[in-house]
Length: 316
Image (cartoon, rainbow, N blue to C red; front, side, top):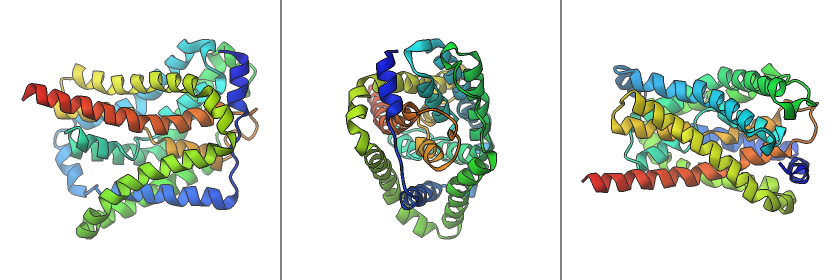
């Protein structure tokens, strides 16, 4: 990678005051509440009667994607900066994205499976996100020649646990309770919350990077290519595993989408609202990769949904 370009990326700084950070946290919690409005306990009962797809989907999200991302960043070598690599590992460590259920519905995928996988990966994120990021992040810092000058990652576990639990665990529980005991309210709120989540993330990215827009735009082509490759790996992982194990067509679509759409909004909150990188040098590359992932996976999800629907027409 061009050292000057890497310096431009890592020099990007995003600083938010307490009010700005609290606003982002509150809106992200509402977004997760909206995701949970589509989750009813009976969905889990129906899906777990045939648990094969759920187990494979969870393995894709929580095990395979972080592992394959680690191998990808090693393979890319000096083509990316160490901070960009850590950004990719952070995104892969996050749970499924909050628009995956919406994209699954557009794709004629298995919605019940999609909702179940979103709930499972979100609930387990309290433990799996810090574990995967610490494990693969430190492996990268240890084995990658381009990261030899960086200190080891020291994850503030309580800080990260508390952030994820408040932003994901509590809204998920409240959303499921609303769906169970106030189904009419949940049905009325579900669709607006889906669109709000998309608008929120785009607005958050624009506002966060507005003061650094010149540096961001200068590097956008390069960032786009890196995120494109990483996102294709995620989509291919879900589709390949589902195909190898001969899952039904609707389930193959769901695993593709669930693995390819990550909650990078959580990644941004962890970067901006915790002390993970207090002792690290400038790490704008992580912020840029995480932010652009959240923008791009909306586009790629819609492209995948369009492709799946075109396939339906050809089969009809």
